[in-house]
Image 1 (tube, rainbow, N blue to C red):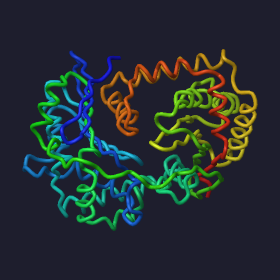
Image 2: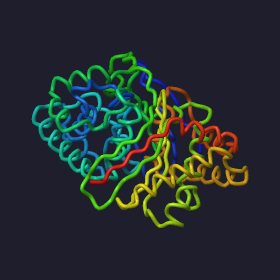
Image 3: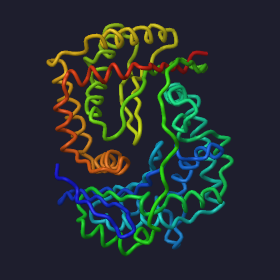
Length: 407
């Protein structure tokens, strides 16, 4: 777990290179430190739509579509939009990494935005939203965020709605691109067999180094997590249940403790909810617990897929178990294996260069402070039973319960 080489282009773009000599595959990623939370409500989902277009629009130099060019190198490409970031990535055989980096640099900095591509990808995104709206295991998380964040932009679905996506114009996309694709709002992370010198050579001779310096203040108010319960009726044979609440942002001293807490709640096969709801009562097959950090807040979620007739038993059982555990917590002997598992799973994630690059982007670029995988793993291993109990008591104040799938 060697630390990345960090540098900054003259216009302020941060660059992290995780050089892994001999790696057969290399991942190149280009980031924008923005996401759905910074959109105008009238065009919610515009960032996600732009993400699609950046990979599908023919490059302005006429060389083709980024996705086709990456696949032509024997690799793969895609993009991710979240509430606080957008990332383009390509994973290719290492000898092709320089070329892949150049392709994504042009895709981000000089996309060929046209009405034709906009209309085509708009339909694709609207179809994506239609499918998600009928899936209780998907839409229940949108309901959770709506309850948790109320009127704050974090409450909105990342993809927006079919109606809001339908309102996005080409001028909106050009305006978004001009506003956010700047030195202080962009970032580059490369993981694999491409040296820092080679990365800088590609970037400094390409369009990323020509981006305007500076950036846009990321201020959309102070998000506060509220509590409550909500049901979304769906005619479905299954139901999705989420229990969750407030957590901590990136950089918080207790973030490692929250990750251990999630393992104790619903990560391991012997976890609190997993043991009772799945193993003893047989009410679920698919369940997990996870914490989402943002630059200024966080939430946690425990998800359970169950039959509609079991929803109330699942909710009551989970609520009771969590409330009782918040009185006394776990012993040091119970927490210690969970710290090993949480640290180990984080290490396993980085077996793929893509996952390691995404970790450094989320934990390092978004909050804007140095972060290393080795340091975070060390912090997880140092988590105490007292840290976990403090986190659990925060997690339940207030509690959010959402259900989708009961007609």
